[in-house]
Length: 148
Length: 419
Image (tube, rainbow over all chains, first blue to last red; front, side, top):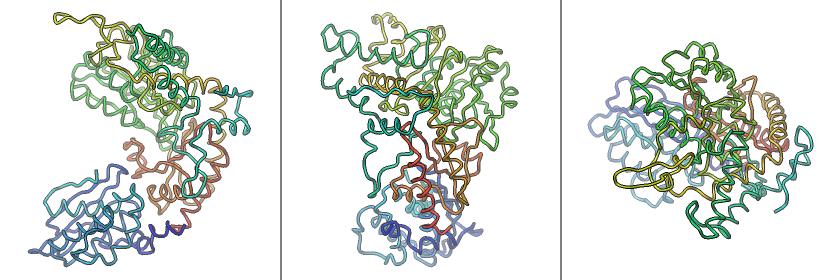
């Protein structure tokens, strides 16, 4: 039970029940759809980028607690962030879940580190990274992202 | 090897199931510090010692390539492999052994029928009739075939219980229908389809029928002659046999009239650069060195279930499913997906406020292995407007205690998620 709590931390439940920035962004100028073929989870990400800054970001879709909370936490963090910093954050977050967090430089992970517990659940890493892969696709003007 | 238990009554007793459990070494382990409860049998079943021993014996004592070797090992390997075919023939009650083609599994068998039977016979506008509850393996080969031939795929819808709408089936069956391909038992819902009625109606119009029996053969006694189906396909690994081996049954006259699926060794009678003469059935469809150990293991698995008795197994599993269904429905917030009057082996469910993936992870923590996802039946998920389900699926070694552990783990999910 104790290790289950490391995966399902309070913050994750909170963001799963009450996802922040949920819904379509009407004045978005970037958009991508992400899907996880493993489980059928789908997520749409909308960005409004002004110059080199992510001015606004919203998401919609249906997923498990891990993927919903990860998307919610990500959007919360990205608002007002420079695109280059968002890219660096993506690399750092991805490394945290897949490579024992070898990357130390770049933006602080802050609240995102509640997802660290996912590392012990290889089958669930894709749930936590779906929103981030979708972000990468949107930033690079690709319409779709897949975790496969 | 100890002799296999033979059921003494129409239904397995708890004592008999306890003895059966001892045949499955993998069941006796702990996962996350708790005794394993394996309820993912619809994905693949575990293998009894008798099957493992058959594989072990083959590789230790008999391994050789089959059919043309004159040496002793080759003769032994050939006899054991062809013995597996005889067992499949008896298991399905096929009329002749040449009607049994070894394949990698149900998927390959369906692709074989699509390409070798249907493709040369279809014209633009012809129709293939399937159902909304098919596994992707009985959808995609037909979609590919339609792209190749200009034929059209028609789909019989299902109702809210997960049963076929037979009126729609009869309406969709038309002069344009050239083949009906239907799942015998749904892997996502557990529905047992009224295949007798489907076959009779199709045959009345001269339309052949393929049954996908991958989920049926571990739970339902199949008699292809009584059913009068034209093709029947299944995979060994859901029937306690190894992965990578399965069988296609086809009526001899149909198989005779079909072109080979793949070219290569073993499927030929003679080869010259001017002309190649194909081998007789079933070898015409078995190009290359086959999964010899798999065919032997499949034979051992068939011996295992037929010695216990499929009727006794089915009666045990059906009683367990009824019990599990009633108990799961007592838990508030749990909804079953698939409530057909006639079903077997499958308990697919969703929970308010918890995604099936989260259910799967928490159940695993409790030592309970189930599957969460779309079960390779995305159209079924669309029908019920869910992204996925959690699916517990039964085998002959599951017990009431397994069901109690499942229920306790579902309660744990509710505690963790506070729903």
